[in-house]
Length: 250
Image 1 (cartoon, rainbow, N blue to C red):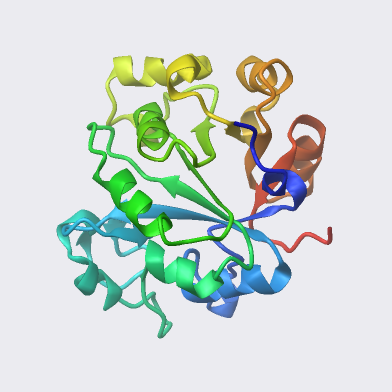
Image 2 (cartoon, rainbow, N blue to C red):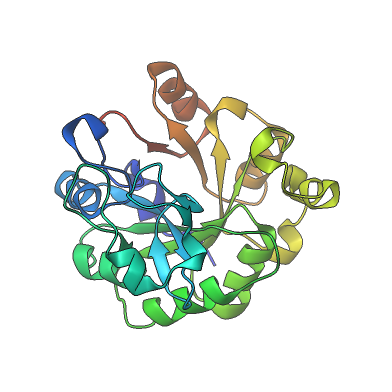
């Protein structure tokens, strides 16, 4: 399967077109509406609720962007949909809500968040939601096991791997060394078989994404582009950028 041309045709808005200063928070409905108005594809994150729903949210815990506290996975979808984003009247969406909101007007790039424990319920729920959605969409994850689950559950869906050159910073401390090693250099590619790669802009260029792009023909996205210097690196080393903090003029 070849990745669709739309994946690299225009910049991708990271968690929607958001601007906290204007009261538009990442992954909330207004950010999605802003991306639609600008004709930008939307990158979004999904998390699993206590009752198995796919919720559009990046953080594993409430509180940074929303009212409330505690792990998102300990609350039901109904409880999460009642939670407001801070200093707004907008509330958390399900993946189905987001699909209904954008209605195929712009592409959707869905990142499956993972606890790296082999739980595939989120991918299965994503498949159920997308079964009735006809708009352009791809899926991706940092977790090679989740990418493999995308391959097995939705073989017709374009899938990607989110990656970086190393996984030794504090964010990845929860993983075992074996898990971190398994993510290095895209060496899982022959099993997960991603159709595209999304790579950290601060670690480009790098051999693994270069090989994926130039030998195996996988389009290369890069995240998260915020500065002119990062935009120049994206233009030099990647096929398209996932951006935030400004509105591209292209």
